[in-house]
Amino acid sequence: NDAYKACVLRVQDIAASWNAEGRLTPTATPSIIANYANLSESRRLLNTQLYVYEPTNDVQRKRGSTGYTLASHIVGFMYAAAGLQGPTAVPQQRFFEWSAHDTTYMPLASAIGFNTKDYMLPLFGQAFVMELLQDKDATGAPNASDFYVRIYGGSPPPT
Image 1: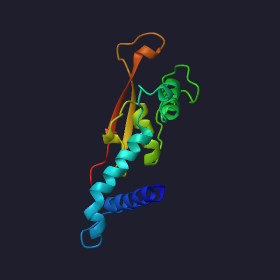
Image 2 (image 1 turned 135 degrees about the vertical axis):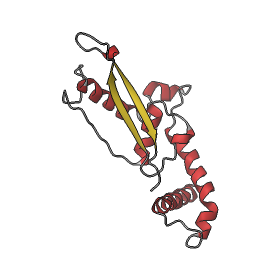
Image 3 (image 1 turned 90 degrees about the vertical axis):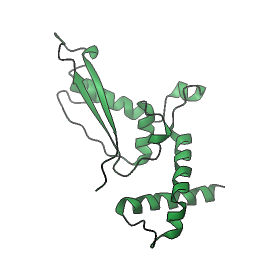
Image 4 (image 1 turned 180 degrees about the vertical axis):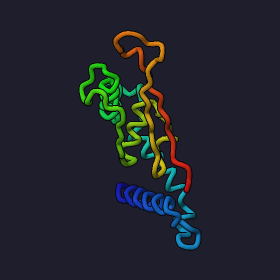
């Protein structure tokens, strides 16, 4: 039932925000605490159905993952920053920052290869840091093979 699913998702979202703020306590919210793990796992399973790229699925293989457009945009910025031909960035710009909600984070995670259920219920403040690095031994005009990307993923330490 769609109304039931919407209710579960809303309660889980509220509980997750309260948890991040330290307001999810046994005395203040006993029924939510008692069901928080089940609510979160339900949310993770739904997110996995919505966002994980499945290469054996013909439709997904033809259109790409839901995060493909954003991943492609980021790669374009990296190409331009490296002085290569890139469609979307100002050359020589060295730092780019995007901020997004979980519904953007999860498709991006899937598109860049973090295609597991572990990335389908991100914590508040979850981040990907992507570094464009150049081979120190590269000589001559830059080309794509002189560069590689290092990706850090995870959540911030608790405060």
